[in-house]
Image 1: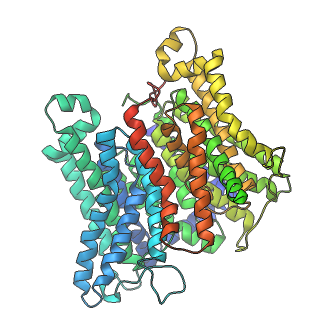
Image 2: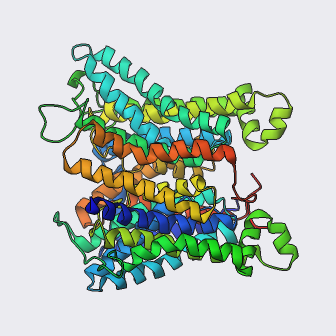
Image 3: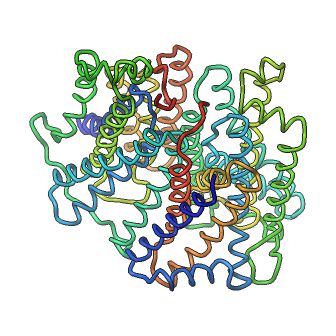
Length: 331
Length: 286
């Protein structure tokens, strides 16, 4: 894309955001300052941004891995929920062994995410069901599953609200700095982003994945195991989203409740799109959206601008990008 | 039991309206997986119109007009500019969820109480007329697609757009028209939900109905008349879920919460193997 088009996308998105702030009765200039302060202005604000970025970076990575292999996994939201549910089930099994609880969460969450994606992978390869449709429906099933789990098998009997039993305090990841919500989870997410970037760009398996995504017939004719590669990308994508859900529990909430997500899976896809479906671009967009999320919460507190601004602006940015980029190649 | 059947019909109506619109669009060769967002948008418009003092039919009409705008906007992105409709639809849902929550919060303020709006009155057949008309929508679409020149052209845009173009007709115009019509029907689907069974607005009030309507289209193998039994089945399942919910939480309730999605998935597994999709579905206009 030309720099002028990029500037137009950014300007259009900012203008729309300013209109929304005006509609809420606040001054765009004051709001911008409040937003920045809420996202980066103090160690607590920065911690909030980093804490929110974990889930977004990992779901954006999940989207990149799947979409680059030609798998339209719209089910990251459900895979995130599956990972969170697995973490809330496995973590409390080890009330006196924090390290075991952590290990259980880190194993169970990606596994659950992959399992949540598995039916869609099977349906796509064996029954030619478009992954777009099956993953969307699996999101509904996962949300229903969470509703059931927090009221049924995982319910904390001592709580008034339907929520799961909490992990032991000692099992939760400690903050990186005092008074900050950021934990080692964000470091793990960024490490995985670097690893995924390396694998996709520099290894034979990454090349094969991209080949299957860009020219499936040619890749197959060249003898690449296309079905195995697509299924592998699908399950890895689910595992990344599942890990995101597990880390949300392990680093932030300590338990599962309902509803557990306000669209992190969909926002992750938007981040991947805005980042041009590259791992680094997707992770950078995810950090940007996380800062927007932290800033919007502060904005709602300070100026009464509804915090759903944080899901409107990413959507607007991606729509502006799609509008500017226009014509696509034949899939 | 009559109460149960009435609820089932009321719940099937939004699904039918939205699925009929989506089927129309997909037969023309485009696809809007952001149908959930369009329904949500229509639901919010109907709610806002009701809060502004308009009668229920005014809310329905406002939602239809808003849906027309939404459909044309979608056409601008996915048809005229030829952006990938799957990507447009994905962020469309995100936008609608955020924008309706934003607008609702601005309108309602910090109040935690439930704001209700007036519902559609019962009409000729004991159901609101808009609900009764929903059951005619697939029949009308079927007749229109098979019996009129415009309907055949619309199908040609989905089956063989090059042929349509070689006749000197614009595939972009046909698909844009279909997108506008599907926007109207999708938004009306969301509005009917708010104006009958749940006369209020909460974030994500459509609760996945747009996604179920998408699945209905595949399940019906893109034939309008097949939408009727499928929507009635899902309406019945949801009505049963409401009944179980009223009797307290338990395993059956949880199962029924997941059941519409599971039923739709199972149906897809069976339906897709048999095919029936428009040949040019999702491909850019020539």
